[in-house]
Image (cartoon, rainbow, N blue to C red; front, top):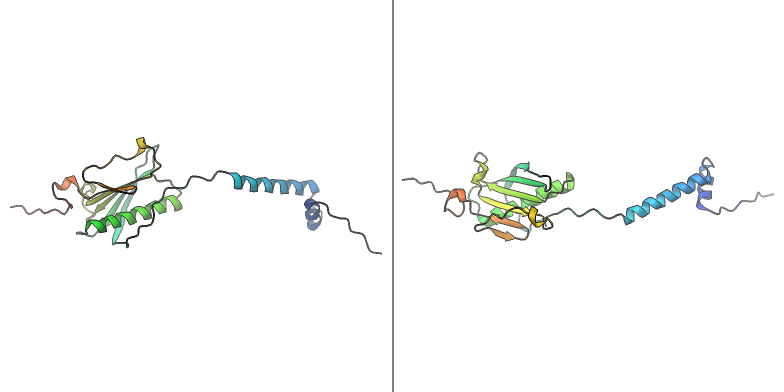
Length: 188
């Protein structure tokens, strides 16, 4: 005589039989319900706001190094200052490309790996790491376009050029009327 198998009506019955009956049917049913609730919550939960990122620069990466990253955040805005060391005599287009790459790489690192939400970066290109930061050759200011107007950084003014969400200034007032910042200190 062949023993008659009982039909398994529910998933909990099948799971209970597989485990060997060590858990009750109510236990497995509650595990299944909790898993379904967890899946539903994960699918319906609002996705956290995308962190602001710059597009990867299209120009070739010039020779530069990020000498220093300083966190100058306030209670309302996460801000960074970058000191970017460049070769002396670089043309403005190459300086702009160096600052673009520096902004892109630091913003990517802070927002992805360090889980910050940087909203403003001031990047200073300098030619000599021993001079004060006020002797910058080029200045770039990036601000998250979604940052409210009262929290946006002040415009640098002068002959600054805004390209996308980055403002570039190639004229440092510390150097006087010299446009590029390369001093001609021939004193007579």
